[in-house]
Length: 275
Image 1 (cartoon, rainbow, N blue to C red):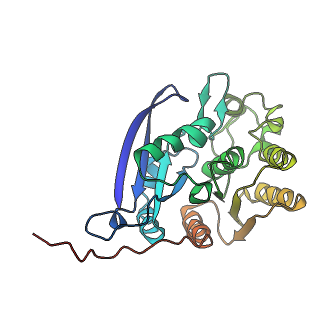
Image 2 (image 1 turned 90 degrees about the horizontal axis):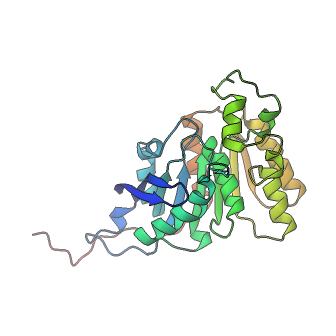
Image 3 (image 1 turned 30 degrees about the vertical axis):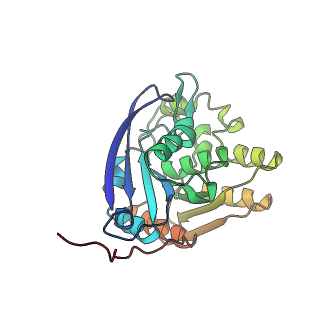
């Protein structure tokens, strides 16, 4: 695999931003027969208090990249939940859903087909994957949300006292704006589902998983019920575990397994001569 750290000037965020990437270099090297290009791509989003280094340091991604022939792109969204801050014009959603995709497709040999393009993540990144996978359903053909932080219901009771993860009402307002209006905007997953359904838009393939002992499981169940009520195909799973890396990694692998990603195995190039 190849590990790449890159910086570029984002128009959506009006500053230099960093992202990391993992490419299945063992299938792209001249040491091997050419792999089938362009590559399928997984834009994988970090959780709250994390950064683009979280997945970069996760050794499993190298194995997954080689196993599935996938390119992984790991952006940084700080703690902004991958939504657009219209007051400051910090467009984290547009950055993830449009700008980063277009930039990386120019930089690497990546497929531009929605069916070859996955967005996913855990916790805050799981919410970001659902939000932007639905909003930019013309870009992403698959959404993988593991233990997604669907937190809109918390806004009703949020105060200036920090909650268990240190978030306050002021923090939520700085990210989502007027909390009383958030449920009527594209920051609310139920609103996005209804909007896409009513306009006859094409839904991406959606996979959601959450642990029985995760405090976020109730909102995952509620979203599953909403999708079921509208007859929208998706897969929802629960399993033993809580909000931790053991659950994240196990269900991330399971989510990729179910996609049956087909790619040619790298084979030695018989014309290579070791000098």
